Length: 537
Image 1: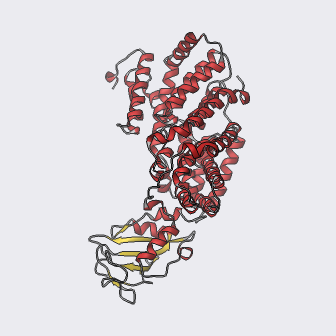
Image 2 (image 1 turned 120 degrees about the vertical axis):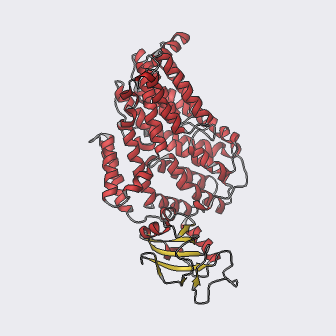
Image 3 (image 1 turned 45 degrees about the horizontal axis):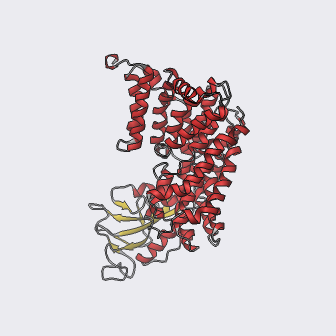
């Protein structure tokens, strides 16, 4: 294997790997995972790092901690805690104008501090569209603010975004200390407030007003799904009676070659393993009152394509909808997530509170707190082991694990010191504020085109070199990185959350920077001037 290595100058090889990785991220022609895996392979192949160090990111405690947090985030969603928050917001759709906008942004900021930016936006997106429609507001005036508020809210806690965890650990490894769980809120809370004020003050002029595009069926909550069933199935259907924390309903289509074909069924009959009950039937392609509709008794001899509504415990629904006899119109897991405060929400909330206490007090290392949280959720029956594995965003995990060696290579090869020294010679140096400005501007530009996680992993070693050469604290540099890294507001490709709101809001590529630019400048100013006041040099 060693014969495959081509030993190059470590510093220049690191620069080449960085450039190729950034180009891979920006062009988006190569899957993110492949680009991330290329980095440690290239660092080993060029002799920059030995094999054990090139692959060290995959066993890094930060990576494991982030993976465990995905399980906790998914549990909050699966137990209906996020749906309950959305329901509370929808009940306040009687608000108008700035009141509704502030309610949506406050919910996004609070939720992203607990779960994740993407999770908060995904949970609140359909609710925001419905609330906007009932209040006579076009969604294009609300959805970009939703995404931006979630980004600002990620600065409220250590677990708001993987970037916070990364800079905290890197600060401790570079002669500083870890940041406290709520310490980020010292800068995050003012930025959430300023973000809301900027949106309210200038959003009317800077945001487009376009007709919304229809959301896909997968974003509908159980109440919306029941309304669509009422139009097609001749049965008395009530959402409050059908969906509870322990039981629900799913719509399935009889699959080709199904064992159900030719079987005569009727409402009230048990199906599957006997845990599920048929509550309504619909002849595929025929209106409920047409000649092919079910008999007056409701019974129907099943053909391929016929629709069946089945009711029962969620676990039984999940198993049945995955069988080869039927095709689920919508995954039953999606419907269960839409039920506010479903099965296991109290246990999930207790685990969340316990995790926050462990992280806030520092009794155990963060990775141990994450491990205990994920283990408790499985032992308490809130999530299953397969569900836990599915909850992890492996793209994010591999991205961080693959780029940690690049960050280490910047230090070991001298590349970070060389960049810091070059900037110092060109500018005369000596000023930590100016060094911080350079770091923040580069981070702000780069984070508009590649993920903020990748940006921070690349820029952090340079920031550490600046701090060490100027003999100042590394804390303001690390905190400024996460602040400016969160200002990914100028393009829809800057974050997944920006992309998520693009179609429902009817946005175009150029719509983001109009409101995003003033907000990005606010975050830049906060990173350069406000952060050193709280975390002195």
